[in-house]
Image (cartoon, rainbow, N blue to C red; front, side, top):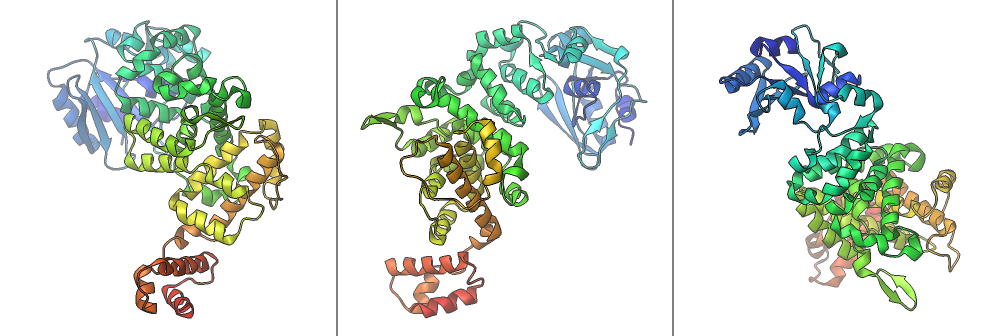
Length: 493
């Protein structure tokens, strides 16, 4: 299939624009193809004809502005967005775009070759730079690795571009121009006026950066982070005596930083890292959870016996996080996961505070957390790792597999010895969960009705006690089948 030839067969004049062209010029692979064509009375009919030619579905993204998406049903599964020039001409279209590096156009000819990668489905395209239409200096900014607005009005025209500036810079490892950052600061309040699902999507794509914490910190510096999350504003002045300048917010961003580090160094950090990776949600979801994990510390902060405490901040934080995620139109599954691990993020630390972690204690922990076990342990790992410097964490890694030693009483919350002990316990929990295949063992072999029927017991606490013993035997690997469970149950009668 010659994609460019098929497109040119239907549209005689067609331009590659936007992120696809930008990435092609940077010699980066791209997945989605954006096209712009001259307006015509039969634009919709032509688009439908192109869809048939490509074996693609066709549906409007924005019917009013005639933006259509074509998605191929078979390999290479190309996704193509096409629309007429905004403003009627190529020049007016480019001048209405967001950043100079996206305000470029390249006229497609039948000879252009989109080379697909069979594994990723991404494309590559060789582009003749001399044939690129550049009205805003985008080629120069590409070379300088700068994100610069096309005009002073781009943020007011579409406030989601406030976030997109950071997301694009993060994806490309570019810098945002000082003028653009100043404009972000002046317009940050506008972010609340845009569709919140668009805000969510830009944020989650930013979290795909291996240094997402760096971009969140820059967003905060220019007023955008707390414009998106006003609930975080109080963190900056809360617990400065504990966390230093920036208070709880400094700690929050450091936890995101530790997750960035963890995901870039998974084999060195976690036992059974391949299995852990299989049981984790997308890293960007866990980074989002890290951003909100202490959201309730300011409202729960209180001086108790001369010490600043945050009793109940995890449970209240789960409630606050759920409201934030509903506002941003997250899926119910994501909301359930994030709110649960925020609401229980102190549990691994509470478990680690014991000198000995018994099988029974681990079993109860795994049973309570279920499929959220690994996500919670990952968040807890980053939370505890934030209490030591990046350099010390690097030297700790080789000791994380050691058997946890008992804690010395009276250590401060940020003691490196305490942090090492807690992280060794976390690694122990990771190892036990993976090695005992707890995901499959969490399925109960028998239930309360089986206990009542087998032992002819009335309903009551005794039924629950016996079930607990059976589940513990299952966790320890002593029983593996329903028949074995029933046999063990009869022996308890």
